[in-house]
Length: 240
Image (cartoon, rainbow, N blue to C red; front, side, top):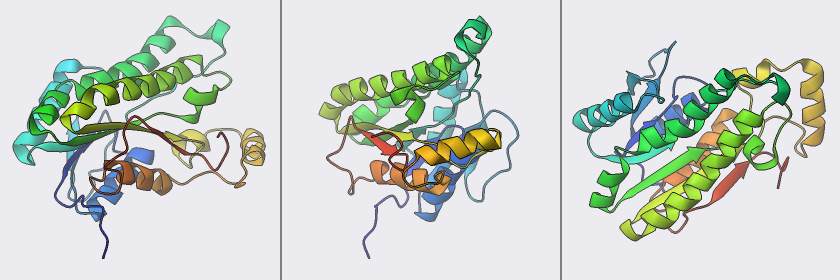
């Protein structure tokens, strides 16, 4: 039977305790990967995964995470930079604290996560990174200038690092989810959700598992071995 060849691959997922992150962790475990994930708070440990409490905004903490994962599970093959937050408001009401919190987590957090990992991937001439962006980072969204800016920057980051990393056999890609059935979307008022669904050709929100499969495809050393610097949209044709 065909396989994504992710069996026994050590993969680190940030923000893997809920929503899309939890779905990614669960699927990678089903595919036989050795999965470690970070969480900032409120974690129910997932079967078989190595759960590590750490804040991606803390560079030293993420260096310690990489060291712990390699010590307990082995060399890191894959990273899914998924940790992210929102702090929405219309721009005139957006505080400096709102701006900094989102940029520090969603963008600087990716830098902090990959800084201790990428050099080792280069040395081993193997590795795959998937950064989780968003439809908001591609088309913008009301009340999300901070979030959209961070997610657009993640795409630029992935495309640029892909060009640097290719010579070492390391691939960097991004997945850009649309509106997905997570706690973040559930908090949206019903009338707003109805309007959003009416704009999606599939007439429904996506499922976390659908994003997880896109991530697994891009992590795979066989299914996507010649793909790097790409953005894979998972949005039901909401934005193309």
